Length: 299
Length: 246
Image 1 (cartoon, each protein chain N blue to C red):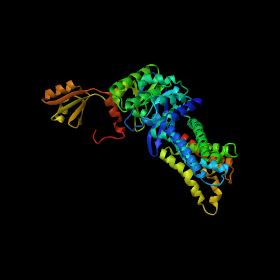
Image 2 (tube, each protein chain N blue to C red; image 1 turned 30 degrees about the vertical axis):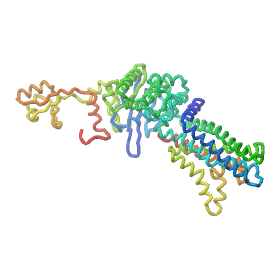
Image 3 (cartoon, rainbow over the protein chains, first blue to last red; image 1 turned 90 degrees about the vertical axis):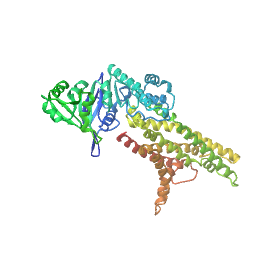
Image 4 (tube, rainbow over the protein chains, first blue to last red; image 1 turned 90 degrees about the horizontal axis):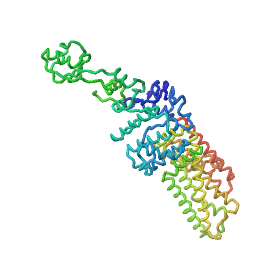
């Protein structure tokens, strides 16, 4: 279990993480979501004792990470996968980690096998692709067979087969009863992997909910309509709210069927009539839009 | 702690530059010994054992720069690649990590330094033939072993500076400034202050251990002062390493 209590990190006058409190429970995959610059990596670094919080703190099973004698046996993490020395082999990279935590050298062979890097174990890391680095980073996280796992953007640079592999691995780790926290800025990825979501924006907690709750609580579905005179259409609708979005209108509180029938009765020609289902992606966009660090001019 | 030492040893030996740098050290030590002694062998006057030993160890200032650079690299390469975060995830007790790194580095370089200093001495004496010195003569063994100790100390000094600066080029510059430029600067201080302080400055104090000439500090006292410099740099490095975000 990972707990963060009022976790805060300030750089000068900017808050990277601002009073964040949450609990990551075992036996499920918790997605850690937020736009780029939301503070996900900083939060993870503070949980792992790399960065010192300005205020508050984080615990792993009741103790700060820094207090563990052999932390890799308790918690494994993949942060920046490319943080390795290019002149070293994968085996030596993992071997130094294993020895530092009193783990047998045989574990290195096991995890290399598990992540599919056994055949390139003795090759210098300089020639690895990003996907191979990710696999090596995951191997490092699994080395101590830990109960708690943290992955920062683990599917970055992976091909579709690799993405599927990570997804399956995360599900399996959670099914084994481990605590799994996975950060991502891609909702679509999390939708297929996570059971629970922690969403942050500009360093603040935006949501901490199960995936289905999250969709329900967030964006509603709507009907997208295009026609020549939207105001005329709105006046003929029996109920519902109409909002203009560029060249189309979104109608909520009423289904596509009712909109179509109202339009037909009033003799209005519709150019488009689409029922848009609520999605995790939409709920996420809606929640984080206001807190995105960098947004383009148009949304 | 054994595991930590093994861990740091793997890091040190699995990088090619470590072995190349140490091979370079041996070459520099031996070639200087050969050339210095060859020049001396043409001179007519009789040389003291201490003098010929010092000649054979003539590459020490350059060698100290090589070992100190390796010391800088031992930590700065972790910062350059970001590997320091992986290391500190595995060993969050940062003081222990630094202690293990320093111990491993010192043990490894001491062995190589002893071998290269001894080789340089033997090559020098072979060139001088019957006019050469032997290890049994007073002070000779202390100078040869002392040279290895000084080089190892310089390496640890480099490791401490590298930890402070977290940057390879910056760390090497810091080494050059403290070991080579600082003595020059102190020497220029007015009113005799330069002459009074000079014996206590980094490399001047440290190299007393491999000198046969009389000085303000005895050879071991000089080396002791050098160790204080190393300790001060290491303490500053430890405090910063523990307080900083990785």
